[in-house]
Amino acid sequence: MNIAIASGKGGTGKTTVAVNLAAFLARGHYTVCLADCDVEEPNAHIFLAPVWREEVEATLPVPEIDEASCLGVECRKCVDACRFKALAWMGDVMRFPEMCHGCGVCSEVCPNGSIFNGVRVIGSVKNGISSINANSQLPLTSGQMRIGEAMAPPLIRKVMDSSDMQKSDIVLRDCPPGTSCPMITSVDGADFAVLVTEPTPFGLHDLTLAVECLEKLHVPFGVVINRYGIGDNRVAEWCDERGVDVLGTLPFSTEAAAACSRGELLIHAIPELEEAFGRLWKQVALRVHREVL
Amino acid sequence: MFELVVISGKGGTGKTTITASLASTGPKKVVADCDVDAADLHMLLAPQHTQKTDFYSGFIAEISPEQCINCGLCAQKCRFDAIAMKKTGAVVRREHCEGCGLCEIVCPADAVSMQERRCGEWYVSRTQVGTMVHAALGIGEENSGKLVTTVRKASSDVAREVGVETVLTDGPPGIGCPVIASLTNASMALLVTEPALPAMHDLQRVVELTKHFRVPAAVLINKADVNSVIAGQLKAWCAETGIPVVAEVNWHSDISKAQLAGKSLVDFNPTEWRTFFEDVWTRLSEVAKCYEFVA
Image (cartoon, rainbow over all chains, first blue to last red; front, side, top):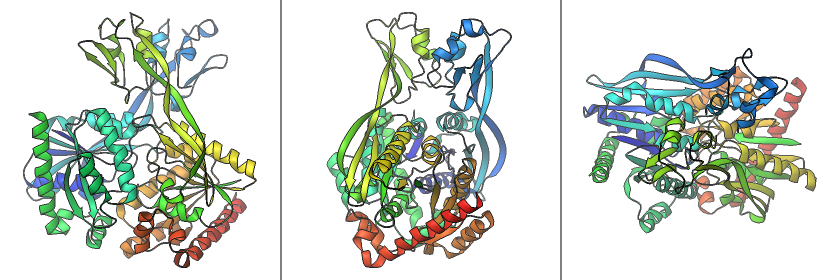
């Protein structure tokens, strides 16, 4: 079961929901793991304090030119075919690896096999285990994008492909905010998405974009209204009118805000919230089973 | 031209809230909303469109069902998982297609063509605080930063036309392409953060990005009273790193009330907030002068 925790607006509480749900399930002895797909600004590890087992450098294949066999000015097929301005003709083929999307067009069109795979380092993928309590462990896979790297999706795909995922019954994905390529990559193939929003005008506006996005992607979803109590009722009313499932609400409290600021799990810091996450999980599981069946 | 770009690293720290109030105070300016993926600034500044332009960027593969022979080669070769094979033939998954054209090259049946891709639209608008340039990226479209670059270029063109020397830019969260596109050659970055470990972690990464692109930075601590211990750690880290903290904003009930009313804090409660944000501009210009002197 792959469950993506996404939003439109940043800062609504995706990571809060992801880490607390994951910890709750780990304590319930489900085989669950968490993938931190917010590779630009990963935060899950702050709440889970994992012991890291390994860190693997992540790279994107970018073209290298074998100048000895390159046909040069008589050919230039790779330069002409590249749609990302990653190759230019300057008397020989000049590469701009940071522009490269790793699409493979250049090596496909090269008539002489003169293009081979080099690499651009895009970041790293770390695997670790978090001890939720004495009896419960939670594997965490976290991607961290290199500062200066522009494209998140290739690293997000590597996080999602990480080996730990295959050993778990439930994979939770902490997704990046927004509705463009990083979010799209991280919800791809999910059985269900939990959209975390807040009951404010910005929360509502960005939620409508995220809902439209998931409908286009045909990913079933439900909404969690976090910080319930600030703002107003427009999010709940919109969900009702639109026929969007509200899976649950998490109440705003300064206590919860303070606990999150300290990087603490809410299910440990505020016992009443443990029940709230339990109820939330029931609603998610019900809908996933309904979709699967 | 002085361009101040408001970014944060972490989402939800209050960039748009702060930008709207900076828009309502300080020098004459053009305002740009570069958070094109989930733009919210227009909800506080009530822009009236004077110009709307379609934005085309890159390409998207189109497969003709009549010509497709269902060989599956395109799907096999595509590195972005952007082609699904159905009984009727190959189908492009639009949201994943990067427009590289590999499928068009390998297709043995000439069934693929690359079409220009309409990714969204951008606007030049009138507001009470000056001209605003903003955009809406289409749902599921690529956010490579080209639309951000278009918005920035348009805002500096407008500023030159109307004889205004300041551009104030609301930036996106994260550190990827759209943030890089917002930052390059900006005069200064204002980093809006909050006293929380996740925000501090993310701030450190975005500061590294500003250094990478040689953009001088200053910090504003929002929701400063949520955790005074971490606020202290934040300020200490800024001091060690040589980044000035220009202001601290405590949590205030006006913040959500103003958003509900569709106004900036300054417009919602000028008595409480106007002087505060004018002071932020004063501090920002002092910081800018220091950076010029150092540079």
